[in-house]
Length: 278
Image: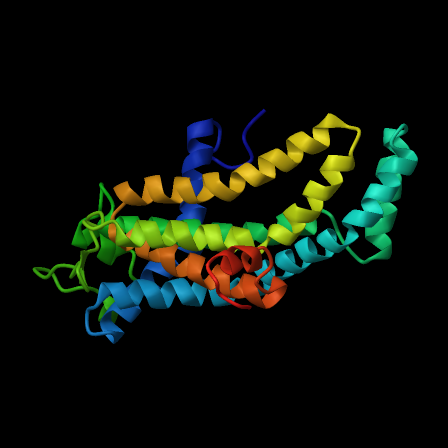
């Protein structure tokens, strides 16, 4: 059987085609935005990265906000879900049916939390790719970058170069003082900690649960509270600081967004330990 499109017969051709679509729809438009702000801010790439990072978060705000609201509703339903588990725990099929019915009655789509995260994740990965084009280990030449720019007035003149300086940073190299990676990891921890009301409720239920899987699930959630910031830190120490700057701004925006959805949440007990009244 012939492939539907000429040249799509093999997996390598398919990958190339998907890569072309990826670059066409996301990477190239974002690269043009970065260059636009780079020139607007008098050739300051740091400010350009910050501006585009915020813009991407604003564009994806409806998706991420919807996902956070679903998580908050799910937290509120945990006592009801526990009652269903006690009543129908012996019949897994009936339990699943009753849970889906409860979600429907409360206007919750269990899959929506994941689905609404797809667009923001794709945008962040695309912006990550753009920054790597400028400052990654295999950064592109100026000529290659100009081929991706739509308008002539945005093209960077031959003979010039991208200014990597921003504050104390060289955006093409890792942060020499590790300030950005540490701050990014800290913000990730604080954001996760704000979601701790869900985990706290899960902990209470896990202590009463007869099924040992509940304990395992809670333990995995709790471990993620610490493993995610550690991963942010380790990866951030090696990446060009231009990429880490994007991670820092994105995480800071997520922290503020989480606050407006759930408030301080699990941060309250932590702040109390340091004598900070909330």
